[in-house]
Amino acid sequence: DTGVSQDPRHKITKRGQNVTFRCDPISEHNRLYWYRQTLGQGPEFLTYFQNEAQLEKSRLLSDRFSAERPKGSFSTLEIQRTEQGDSAMYLCASSLGGQATNEKLFFGSGTQLSVL
Amino acid sequence: AQKITQTQPGMFVQEKEAVTLDCTYDTSDPSYGLFWYKQPSSGEMIFLIYQGSYDQQNATEGRYSLNFQKARKSANLVISASQLGDSAMYFCAMRELGSSASKIIFGSGTRLSIRP
Image 1 (cartoon, rainbow over the protein chains, first blue to last red):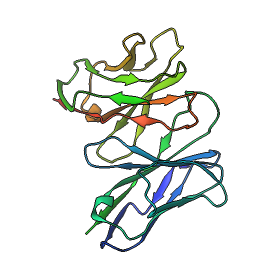
Image 2 (spheres, each protein chain N blue to C red):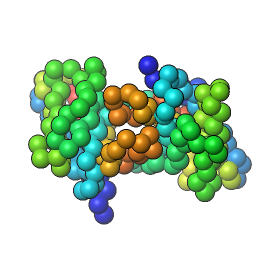
Image 3 (spheres, chains in turn brown, green):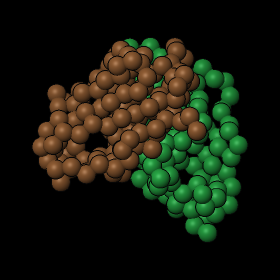
């Protein structure tokens, strides 16, 4: 199966620790997105990449958050000095890109972060 | 600023009945796309249907159809002959073409429960 994969599926950490999540997009997709979803809410946009360039970051993304996509393939999302408010599902999605409004996102299963 | 509103936090429907999930949106961009995604309890977001702002006809995909009323800025999802497997969260989403951002924004979702 060549869908979007995320690792790990679940992460439990103590407040103040750093965590890193990985996303492997569909291989021919040049755009990669990170979203955060809290219980009972829709996904909130965090950031996206076109190839290796990070083109937009949400104001939700504080200085403790950083994302990379070094070779335009997989991406990592790091959260430093985690806080309990960071507890959420972190979703990764990829797409073929382009200039059309019908560009749809393909999502991974997400990483569920719990900060104790 | 773009915005998606889903006013039904939860709905219960009898199996085999049709159901309409409401979605209204706000944008000043004449070119935009509207999406519906399904999120089962497993967590993965599944694309269901797409409608472009210039499309003359309502989109249909199997049992899913989108009731697009451009003047009212609404894009309701209709599921015909509901099945137990339709029980899930449903999210309406939008992408603008003119914005510098390529992101899709999501509504807060509707939890649909199908009764046998």
